[in-house]
Image (tube, rainbow, N blue to C red; front, side, top):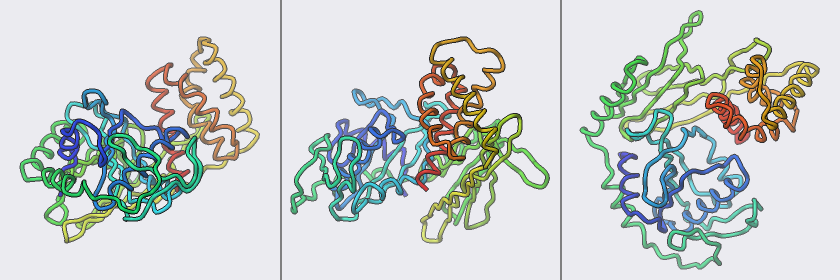
Length: 377
């Protein structure tokens, strides 16, 4: 089994990007330009590596390979994006890999791309790229090219050597468990071994509501691969497991006017098998709450007025500061209730929320995360 942290280190040891791996400071698939560039790189790497995996490492400085990390990205529906925009789409997996020197909420993103050995191209126009475009890697650059039937397999042996050199061992596994327990000692860390092979650690603050136990500040990590499976400081999560599976149900707290309710967002099941493999399946459970349209019109207009005050740099009173914390979630609720322009307003608010405070920006990112999951499902 591959230790993904070692894999990233071994990829970066090549220093320069090449035809089987790319590195990025960050990606932004929430915006059209960022989405288009990401799809271009996936297309180019898939076409240039028909016989082996290729990789994108995210959260690394281009100049000196300094690992600075990015936000935890839990988009389990990224394959849906690939399928929607690419013909002969490769199999794509996005994983969050923690590094000891990074802050708790930072990881390195690892995108693994497995070609289906067919020519991949853009299915439709996006940003400045035209539908039908075919991309290949030219050294470290993803370039549009006329397809040549003879694509030389020059990378398989190199990638195989890198992956073999990144295999996990008992020492790495034990170090990973001890590190998790030391880091999460204030949040009731636990572990379980599945199928005498997989070691999964999790932690969180327990809260009992009636007969159910929920967790906040949840961190879940598959130690064998050094992959963070889930991380959140905001949501409530329920956890259940037996000898074969580990199940997480994530809830989001939505509402307004001091009336909030927890709604199930997504169920993720990690199924472990006897042949030293596992499978992760995520199912969206979210049903958008519906509210009185007259009340929503009032809230929507109040949000717009508050956004204008932010734009003009006016000072906010205490009530407006409280309303600002609710602004991302209430714009989201408005959108789910067919106020289509509410999402444009939410994105418009991004730089102002980011400059206002770290907390308001976190609430913005949480709203966008929910929207992304719903959109690609």
